[in-house]
Structure formats: C-alpha cells, structure tokens
Amino acid sequence: MADWIRLEQTPGAGGATVRKLLAQFASPQRIFDAGYRALSGHVPAPLARALSEPAAPAIVLEASIPLPQRGPSKRKGDQRLEAKQSADLVSL
Image (cartoon, rainbow, N blue to C red):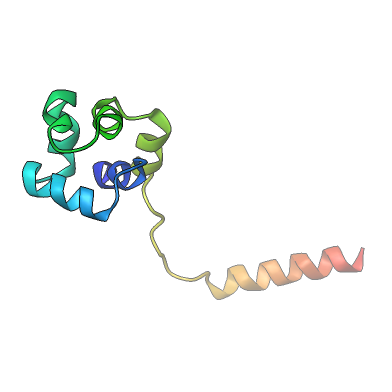
C-alpha cells in the first residue's frame, strides 16, 4: 500500500506514465526497486531520479499508520455519564 501511495504522490507521475511503468515493471515496488538506469529508459530523467530515490520518511510513516477500526457505539451508561458531566459543568 505504501508503494502505491508513494507512486501517486511522486511529482510528474501522471496516469498514463504510471500505467506505462506498471506495464513494464508490474508493481509499484518493482518500479521503485528498478533504479535510475532502468527507469530512465521509460520516463524523463527527472522522474526517473525521483522514482529511484529512497522514500521520504514522512511518506512511509503516513502510509504505515493503520486506519482506525469502527467499533461499537458508546454504551448507554457512557452516554448518560457524559450528559451528567456536561450538565454539571453548565450548572457551575
């Protein structure tokens, strides 16, 4: 998943270019593993350079944060307690 996000966020990697690279390399991970020399035969040099550089830590971190899971809604007792606490604060 992180490689897909990284590929999408790479400046200059538009839809047609990404499709061309995926046809050649089969997956985003293989695109990033290919290196500058292999990529430069398929895309302009600045894009090949950007794709062959290591991922920025912020991109990797962003992609590796798990999405929150939807859990059950609060129990009625919790809702009553919150309402009481809110009422107590208002009455102060």
